[in-house]
Amino acid sequence: VCTHITTTAAIDGSGKGGASWFPVKEVSVGYDHATQGVNEHALLVDFVNYDIGLGARLALELDLDSGRALVAALQKVIATAEAAGLR
Amino acid sequence: MAADDATRRKDDMWNSYDTGSRVGVMAQTIGYPSEGADIHAYHATPLESGDLRPGIVLVHHQPGWDEFYREVAERLARHGYEVIAPDLYCRAGHATPDDVAAKVRGQGGVSDDQAIADLAAARTWLLDRSSSNGKVAIMGSCSGARQAVLTASRVPGFDAVVDLWGGAVVAAAGDLNDKRPVAPIDYTADLHSPLLGIFGNEDLSPSPEQVDIHEAELTRLGKEYEFYRYDGAGHGFIYYHTPRYRPEQAMDAWEKVWAFLERRLSSGSSEKRD
Image (tube, rainbow over all chains, first blue to last red; front, side, top):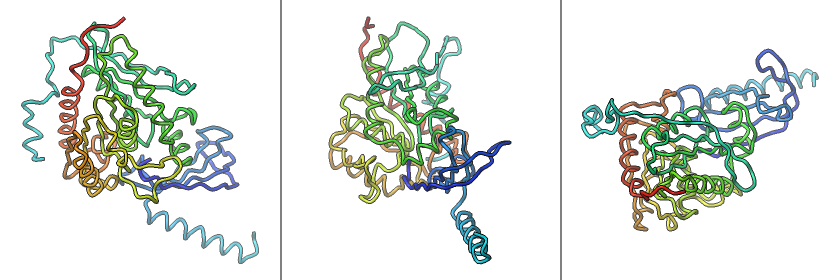
C-alpha cells in the first residue's frame, strides 16, 4: 500500500453488485494507486460485507474533485431529508 | 534517456537468444510454509536442464497478487531464474485480486513483520531446491519494492535487491504505525545486498526528492547500489496493462534489471545438490 491513506466505517445499507442486492456493513475509503483509469492515484471507495465473502463488494475509483462532489451531494440530500423530517 | 538509446539496443538481452535453442518454463501455484500457514505462491522455473540456477523472490505490488505478477514471474523464468512470487495477501482470503487487495487495503495493509516472515520463508524454500545455485535475489514494485528493501535489510543473506519505484521507503514519522513502525531507509545500515533502483521522475510516491534522500543515505553508509531515473515516466511505467506504460523507458529498465541480475546471481555453486 504505497500511500497508506485509508480509513473504514461501519455502515448499514444495501448494495447491488451484478444482478443481485446484498447487505453492506462497512465502507473502506482510501487514496492509493488506481486499478482503472489514467490517474496514478484515486479515491478508492469499497462498500463491502465480508460476512458474505470478499466478492461482496461495490467498488468506486474517483478523482478528488469527484469525491468532493459526491460528499457535497450526499450532504445536500441528507440535510434536505432531515429538514423535511424524513429521518 | 534518449530515444536513440532505446532503439539502438545493440547489447540488449531482449531478443538475444538463438532461435535454434529449446526453451521451456513450468509455472504453477504452489503452497509453502511460513509461520504455520500454507502460503500460496506462483512458482515459475525453467524446465529441468540439469543446470543449477539462481532464485528470485518476487514481491507483488499493492494492487495484489495479480496477473501481471504471474507474467513477470514467467518472464524471469524464461531468462533462467527460478521464481517464487508469494501471495502476501493470502491470509485475507481468496477472491479476484482486486477484491482481496481491497480487503487488505481496508485493514491498513500487511504488517511489515508478517511480510518479512513470509518473504524470508520464500527465500528458504528456493534455497532448499536441489536446482538452487545458492544465490537468491528479492525483487518487487510499488509496496512490494518497499517490502523487498525492508526484507533484505532485516533478513541476512539475499544476494541482490531490485527496487522498482518502492513507495514509502522514505517516510515521515506521522506515516508510521503499528504495522509499519520503522521506515525502510532507517535500516539502511543493515542492508548488505547490492541494490538496483528504478524510478520514474514523474512519480509521486516515491517522489524524486524521496529517491534523493534514499540515495544520499546509501552513499553516506557506503552501500553498493545503482539507481536509474527516467524522464517522461511515472509510477509503474513497466505496467503494460495500464495507461502509465512507457515502452522506451520500460524496455531500458528491463535491460538494467537483466544486467544487474546476471552480475549478481550467476556465480553461485555449479554442483548439483541432492
